[in-house]
Structures are given as C-alpha cells and as structure tokens.
Image 1 (spheres, rainbow, N blue to C red):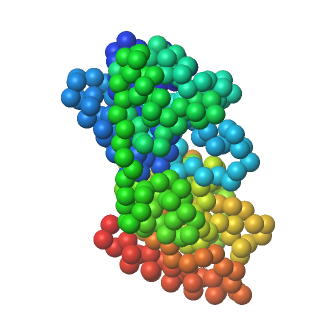
Image 2 (spheres, one colour):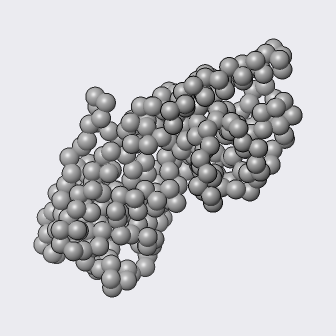
Length: 310
C-alpha cells in the first residue's frame, strides 16, 4: 500500500482519486462507513481510493500537554486501511503551515492542485482549514465550483449511541474493552518493542514481555485477559497483562506487561501487538508476595477461561 505525504505531489497514477477525509485514528464503525463509501465510489468509476489521516492529531498540535489519547499508530492505520480495500494512505503532517492554511486553499491548493482529487467523502461533522472554518457545505459549494465532487456520510450508531473516538476512549478509561471492541470492530491493541526489564516477573515464575505505552491512550490500569501477536512471525498468543505502574514494586514505572501462557521463547527486541479483551481487576498492592502470587494464579485462570474460545 502506498504511504503518501501531503507535502509532496502524488504520482500520476493516483491523481483523480476519491479521498476519504478525516483523522480516522481509531478507524471505528463511523470511520469505516466514510472510508467504505469512498472505496465503493472509486471502484464504481475505476479510480484509486485514498484514506487520509492527520499526524500528529490536531489536538496534540494545539494542546501538546494533553494526556495521551492515541488509539492507533500510523502503521496500524495503514494495515487497517489496506484491509478495508484502499489504494493508498495519505498522511497530513499537521504543523504550523498546515494549521494556517485557509479552508479555501486547502480545497484549491491541496485537494485539487496537489492531489488532483476527483472527489472527497467526509463525515457530517468534518471541519478543516485555519480555525476549522471549512465544513461539508464549503466542500460542496467551493469545491463544486472548482470541479471537486463531494459526498457526506451520516453518523453511525452502535450499542445505543453515536459511535465516536471519544466514546471509545471513555470506554477504555472505564475498563470496558468489550464496548470499545464493538465500536472499533476489533479489540483495542497496543504495539511495541519488547524491552528488557528488571526480571521481577521471571523471578516469581511469571516472565512478562515489557512494552512502553508511549503515546497510546491509557486504558484503566489493571489486569486484562489479552492476546498477543508477534509481528515478524504472525504467532498468536494468549495471556494476562498488567498495565499500570506496578504498585507492588519500587520504584513505580508505567508499563504494559503481558504474561503469555504456555510460551517459553525469547521475545526481546521483537515487535508485538497486545489486544485487550476483558478487564479482570484494578491494580492493587498486596501484603505479601505469596498473596500476590495467589491472586496472579486466579487472574491467569480467569483469563484462560475467558479466552478459551479464541
């Protein structure tokens, strides 16, 4: 799949594409509806389809100190967009220059001149351009006069309310990965490189694969039933994971620590993806190591039970 940079002209083969415009961080049900409409439209007319995204997220650019809220990395998004059937991913690198681009120039200079877009598809609430003054009406009116076609996809509802990234983030912060998975159509997953740690888990019989959480949203701290995937080999694993600051040990250190059942290999230096399926309990500090081990055994038994059909 092509990975395009908004600062560069697209190749001739990708001019005349239909572009799905949005941030599409989580690529949830609503995002999939917008992308799906763009892909169908492109197929009907024999055109390439492009799904756009912004990096960093505009909120991160304007408010750099907000807590981490990312649901996917660019690499994860690229895989999701490819699986959806898109020809290419277009990354808008959100910087001061892009933030200062007027909505009219965004349409004329970027969408039409630089990308040669035939059409764009957005959600009903999509805004763009300096001061977020551009909207679907401007795309239709201003873009239409310049030969750019546009379509708007209505909001999508799921599990009783409108599907949104903010709703998914709230579900994860509240320890409800199952609701998040319904709205995403897949479990929330953190991807990272396995690092060497202090080997405490190995010493007590539960060797873990330590991953930094980086700029991902922090789900509710605690213990989860998880699955893992080794990216290099595709190997699938089941386990239980702690995400949090490890209150039993000093000094506190924020980590994602999955323990994979029935696995004895070496994952150091490997890139893995850990998917969150069930929240088991919150983080806790125990009176003794024995009490901790007894609880860990119960956690692993429950995680095995919950993951048995996967």
